Image (cartoon, rainbow, N blue to C red):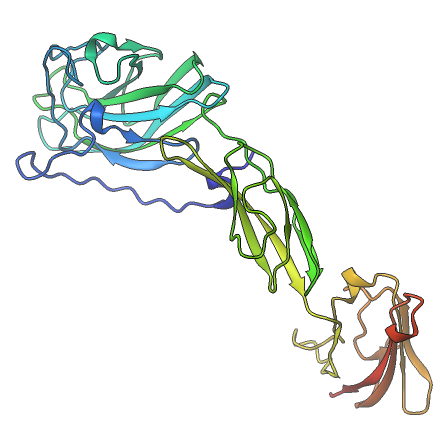
Amino acid sequence: MCTFASVLKHVVHISFTLFISVGTFAQANDNCNAATVICANQPQFSTNASATVDACVGCSDGASAAGNFCFDLNNTVWFSFQTNDVGGDVDVVISNLNCDNSIGFSQALDAVIKDAPTPCDESSYSAVSNCVSAESNALNLSATGLTPNTTYYVLVDGDLSGAATNAASCGFDIVISGGGVEIDIEAGDGGAIFIGESFSLAGSGPSNAVWSPPSSLSSADTPETIATPDATTTYFYTTQTTNGCVYQDGVTVVVETELYVTNTITPNDDGYNDFWEIGSIESRYPASKITVFDRWGQVVFKVIGYTSEKRWNGTFKGKDLPSGVYYYVIDLNTSSKEDVFTGYVTIIR
C-alpha cells in the first residue's frame, strides 16, 4: 500500500510548543465545527494551548464541563477523520508531548474517539474507542468496526487533576492509521523508452483517481493510460477524499536518448571517465556485439552484451593499452545492416 507518505518516504520533524494567551489568540480547532482533518499515515503537529470550552445544551463541546465524554472538558481541541469505503479498525497515536511546565500546570492529556450521528450535537455523541490519559508517554486510541464512509471525531483535552491548578497546555503530534481509514493506491511499475515511443501506465485504487501531469498522457482520468513523454517524467496517480485528504503514488518513465558513444576515456582510476560508455545499449540492445581494434587491426576488446560489468577500461589481457586512437565496431545484433556502427575512441593517460 502506498500513500502520500509512501511517495514522500522520509519526514524530518521538529516539534515545538507555542503558548499564547487566550485573550490574544483563538484556537482554530477548539470546537467540533472547526475540527482539523487528519488523514491516514500523515502525521501533523497540533497544540491545545489556547483552546476554550463552550459548555451549552446541544453545542459542539457539551451541556456541561463534563459533557458527554469520559473526562472533564478544559481546553479541548477537535480532529475529524473519514472512514473509507470498507470501514473497520483505526488507531490514533498522540505522541511527542511538549507541555508548559510552569508551576501549577498539569503535564497530562486526555483523549477519546467519538461518533457524532448528528454532527456537532453533544446529545448524539458516543465513545467508540478507549478513553486514555497520559503524561509524557504516547496516548494510544483504538476503535474497531467503524462504519464505512462516516465522519468520526478525536478529542484531545488538557487534564486537570491532582494538585494541578491549570489544565495541561501541550504541543503534540497526532497520526491515524488502520484498515478503516487507509486508502490503497498504486501507480504501477515504471520503465524506460526512447523519444517518440510510448509507455503503458496501469494504476489501481479509488475510481476518482487521476494522473498528473496530464499533458503527455492519452487519458488522465482512467487507471490505464498511455504516456508519451519527451523527457524523463514522474507521473502521480492521485485521489482526494471528500474531506480533503490526498493520497498518491508515483512512477517514473525514463526517456533515453538514441545510442550515444563517448569518444574518449581517461582510465586513471579517478572515478571519472574511466570506462568507455555507450549510452542506452545495455537496456536497449542486450545482445549487441562490441569489437575494438588498435591501429594495426588487432582486436583488443570484444564482448557480447555491453553491461556495466563488461565495460572496456582501456586494457588488453589485463594490461593497460597506450594512449592513442582505437577503432570500434558496434553491431546491435538486430539483423539489420543499418544497426552496425563504426567510429573511433581515444585513450588518454
